[in-house]
Image (cartoon, rainbow, N blue to C red; front, side, top):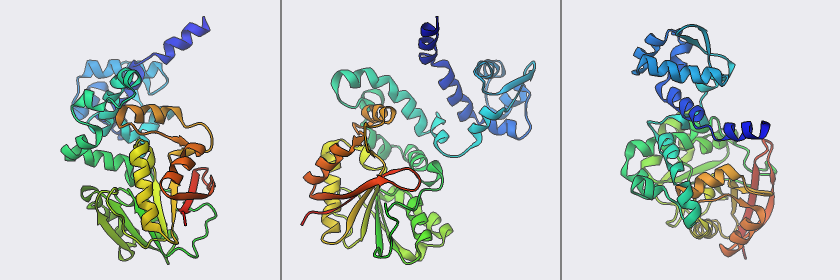
Length: 328
């Protein structure tokens, strides 16, 4: 029956885990280099040939990879996606992607308790776990930053009017990928990058490569501490969704205080015009209690933080953007 078949497909765990295994091992990269025989693939990837063949054969059955001959596997169009940079970096089970995959086992407890369950799985809350594991933190920074997201969108202002903007403060800007693109696109603009010391220390190479290092200041700090004042735009790109309402409101309040009296706060990511995205919301619920918010929810939270929403809508790339100014 079609209904039963659909349920079976939805409950399949073999396929997503097999994809993560071959991504972690770098199988697609080896195939792209001309290696197809499973024994040689296993040697190159440090795996067991028979077990690897079974995983690949399962994926062939799902339309990923081809098996043109016994024990020989090659890329097809679907498998070539594994060679692309970006979100698929999250499939790496040896890095932050592995933490995310394991954290899903806490979903039932999160639903029962209404609290994030990352700590019950890994022994520490999400942010503390990153601080305690430098390699894990570096993997997270890479996944969330320039390398993981691809080239960021520099047109974060709704009406693309940068004439009055002299300084952008990228709050929680990671390793600086988005800020670098903004400064490249707008040569008259100065930038300030705000993020934890361990994260911003990797920004120098990105700013140098973009040719904007002479226009950037870096502030290694918690963004819950007082922010550098005097910016024209305080940018929150994919930041608010990582936090529950209380700390998110605190962060907005800090931006409002730093932006007063004439600056504005620009939020990209984590706010939607209608219903919030479900999958992202579920993962955040498990990891750290964060959430996506609809426009009505965000407007109320912004008001509590001393901000008044002045504009909202989709930018040229279809991303929902909200702009707000400090209440007078």
